[in-house]
Every structure is written in structure tokens, then in C-alpha cells.
Length: 188
Image (cartoon, rainbow, N blue to C red; front, side, top):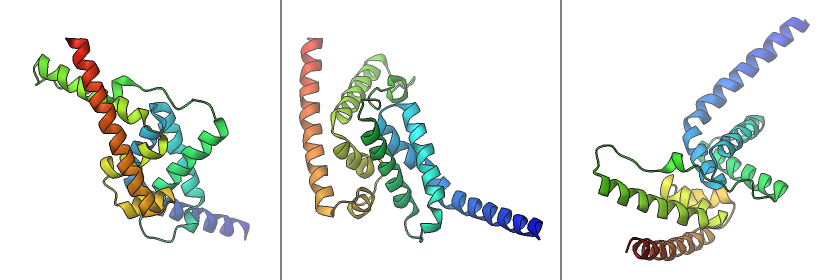
């Protein structure tokens, strides 16, 4: 009897894993994208996504359908903030320039330089945003999520999402304007 029960448990476990993979693996890139912008370090983002997927697998029986991407990104977000509270250190702050530097061999050197400067200014401006602002910017502008989805993921009202986006955009605008001025004065 024990062998039959073990076999049944194994089949159920494999079925659960297959269902989990079918539902959540398509959202791996979105999870990594959010984790990368929150942690700002490739290795930390990979660790964060791995931890979030483990948590999602453990909580999979509680998933009642609906938007799997939003459910998963909520777990990524919560895992990040839990780790941030636990560590209270600045462990998530370095940035790998190689990953986000823009380059194209088809461009001329002047265009490549201008593109690299623009990308660097934007990256720096995004990194300087507080995590709550960076989070809503990534979810809205890079992941294309609706205000309602972001509110669900962040656990805040839609009005808060809208105000955080407005403040984040305003800070980005000021940071980019200041960065362009600094780059122009350094070049001149």
C-alpha cells in the first residue's frame, strides 16, 4: 500500500510542477526585468527571481487563476522588499554597465556615442529613483502593465500608483535635464 501512495503522491507532485511551469515560466522574463531594476545587479536579480519562484511554487495551491503575471510579479516585489528589510544594507546597489550599455555596430561612432550617453543618463536617472518610483516606472513603461495591475502588484490604491508615476516621471525629467546640461558643459 505504501508504494501505491508514494506513486500517487509523485504523480500529483509532477502534475503540480507541470501546471506551475505552464502557467508561470512564460513570465520569467518579466520577473527578471522587475528584479533587475529593483536590485540593479544581475546576480542579485537572478537570486531574487529564484527565491520568488520557489515562494510561488510553495504558494501555488493558493493561486486561484486570474492574472498569473501580476501574481508572480507581486511575489517578486514582496521578496525584494522582504530582503531589503532583512538586510538593511546597500547590497542591491551596484550596476553592471555591460548589461545595459547600448551598442550597435551598424551605427557611426558619433551616433553610438550619443546613444550611449543618452542610455547612461536614463539608466542613472532611473537608478537614482527611490525603489517605489523605480518599481512603478518599470512595471508601467517597460512591462506595459495597467494602473490596476500595478496597484494589485504593489498593494496600493490606483491613485497612489498614478501619483508615484507622476512623481517618478517628474524626477526623471529633472534628472535628465540636469544630466544633459552636465554632459554639454563637460563636452564644451
